[in-house]
Length: 552
Image 1: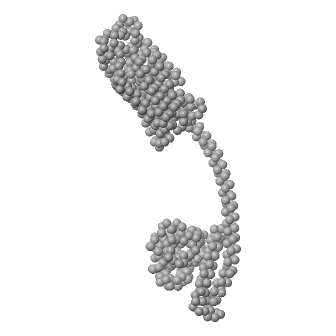
Image 2: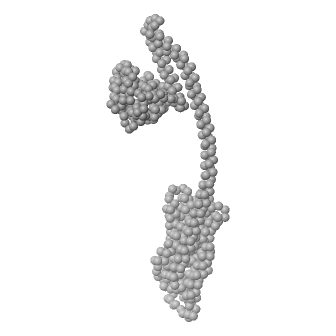
Image 3: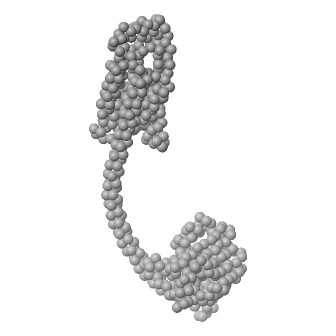
């Protein structure tokens, strides 16, 4: 396709030139003084056109070249040919347009054989350079250097071949320093453009649009910079030649034809690259979606089987745990009942008096037995709740009566510690619906903990109604709880580091059991506390549940 377009451009240009030939005027001559320096002028419009051709063509060629790495099999070679043709045609069109923008005060003709050779040189060099940098997904510096030498060398070769195609009554001379500098610019900037296109695509997080535009601008600068720096170092001096042998045409019109043709070709190539990429992406996405769907289905089936197996194992383990705790608690309660009973009889001195030491030991035995019995009861209750086997005996309770019963049980403990024990119940809170034994168990746990971790001040039980809940708030002026410890406060067997000097820290089951019982009622337990500023534990019971019970 590109070859046919290039051939069309050449044929059109040749026909255009032939229309401007004047074979009948063979006797005409243009005579100049020999060895006269010719002063050239520049057409800014053609210069701008040449720059646009270079930048747009570079963008197209580099965009197509990225497909070489992504493609497989024969498609890679087609993308390589397309990118080489696009870049070579861009260099050729830019240089030819820019040469025509360099106006001399004498007629100029062109050797079209050399023009075609210059086109082949840049296409071949561009293709080899892009082949060097696109062989592997991860491009190393040696292929980058080789690719830049070929691409830059193609730009240089195209320029000087195109210059040698000029046919005019003058002799060009070149500034060696500027010629070398133009070659360095072509190779160095080609290296930058190729690095940004192939290497930076993997190593950098630069947005794709910015990267592509940057690489196109750098490659366009390499093409234009090489040409215009080289043209700064060229000068023309007149020679004794006849011009009837030359094909004299209007350079402006020829440049416009070539520039517009090149822009059309490059635009079509860019559109072809865009639609091909879209198609490739859609095909790839479809394949990926199909693979992901199959993989996801396998994962779902596998995970479902794993969860079912884990559920069976968990249920079996939970049943075994519950059965074990039930059996153990029964076996432990039997000897504990005897220990507590006989210790209580000895403490009452029914069968004789005890000395002070014996009385102390019996008291310790009785207290340890009762503590161990409480631990066994808590373990069994917690296990039954987790297994979903705990049932509540809900009834309508007098809030004040329940609170006073709890306070009376721990009043002696507060007196012995020198703490005030206060109760405040809002007038609009009279009854609640709950399991009386479980409600007292929760409140006693909260009150006991508050007394245990308070040295000076008071413990207050306040009851009010707010936000659809009856709130039992137990606040103290104790040591408080650190923020990082509040997250584990309601987990079984977790004890806090606050107050490590205390001798009786409990088992770590009380709060976990209390919260489970509260949630079983449809409520919860929350805590507000700061280290050194006391704590406030709030038991929430749903108001709707209590109101429904009152109506019934």
